[in-house]
Image (cartoon, rainbow, N blue to C red; front, top):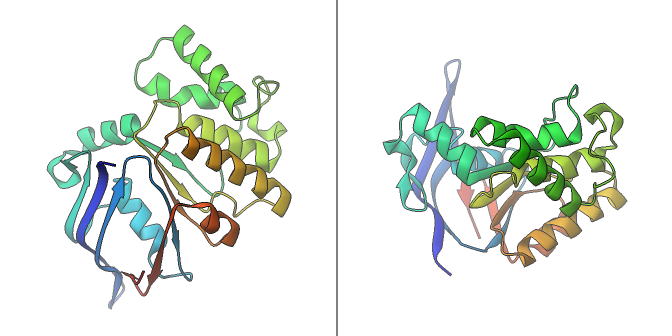
Length: 223
């Protein structure tokens, strides 16, 4: 498999008042196209910080992050935003759906931002909601959906622009065990369909599903 995403000796330092915080310390990793990677570790170990760097939502203090050979540091804000929109799908713990919009409209949003015509994006949004098992919930507002249904909509939205990689931060964290198992099955299907997935999780079941597990501690990859 070819390398899709790579991190080279990345550090991330913050300041909290007079205190310096080193959230990441010399992280190097490579994600192959079609890989399914779980990132695990205790709270505060740097998992979510790493995910924000992978997704171009934040920049390393030093080191490099490259997606499909493109170094994020060489992009201006507009180009980085475009890359995130077109090449990266995000799934968050708390869904981040717009409550006043229907499931269909939420999935349409990333395509609307790309300038895709209404007819085309509605057709694709309906197709994706069918893929995640919500063909009968297209016109329901986010507030009318269960937690598991909202996460399915969020996954469909992440797929809207056919991204190169899906980045998920605790996707089962807000769900009960049975509903979480349904999301695990959906991630399993995404991987089987050739999607590249990087998932930050405390869920041992999800970590076992992944093809590869990376463990973080004190800002470092330890395995």
